Length: 282
Image 1: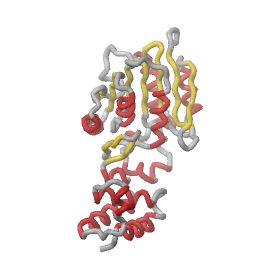
Image 2: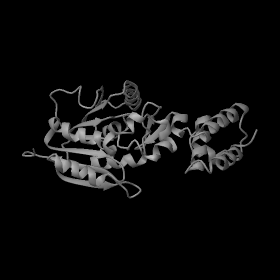
Image 3: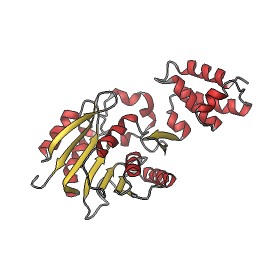
Image 4: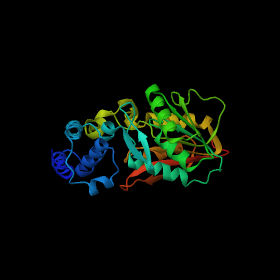
């Protein structure tokens, strides 16, 4: 059997033309097989793999070469330094989405703020904010029963008690409640976008990716209906596509919000747009 180093080297070469991060992909899959911390690769790289380890690694590598996301193969993706369980019922949390968490934490909100996460998926955004703000009361909604079940598992695994996971089609399950902050990473991709046929998104649910009106339909729906659930003052915040910042700001303005502004992600692309609802707003 090859050593850990030799297996990783061969795997990295196989993934070179298929992944933007071939070495990292190979390492993550190896660590999943070995059930060891990252430091193990450097301390024990010359150790021969057992026959079972090599078999398991090559099986995972074959699936990765076929395009399956690493996160689906390991069942976990780190987000905001939290281990978030993932499966094919939801989007895989992306590093760019951490920009939304950063912007939410930068707001001047009450210590006991109420926050709503619409379309929570794995629960990553809500759980990241819950871990940082234990006095916040957070509701996290999703229309997918499978996503709700997954978000509940993540909440339980992380031991975060200030989050309530709710099965709801946008606002439908809510009654008389208002929030200081509403956030959402809704579907925002145009159905004709060629990126839907590339990379990890091929293995993610289209219902969590695609929206009508060039990707803006769900964003506009939320902008309109969030008024009934936002405190005054309150903030509504979205993740969106890198070319949608101006369009989302325009929608906010058309529907009576003020101070619409867009923040950039790690790649210096427009990614987060937020606006305020204050007393006197229509």
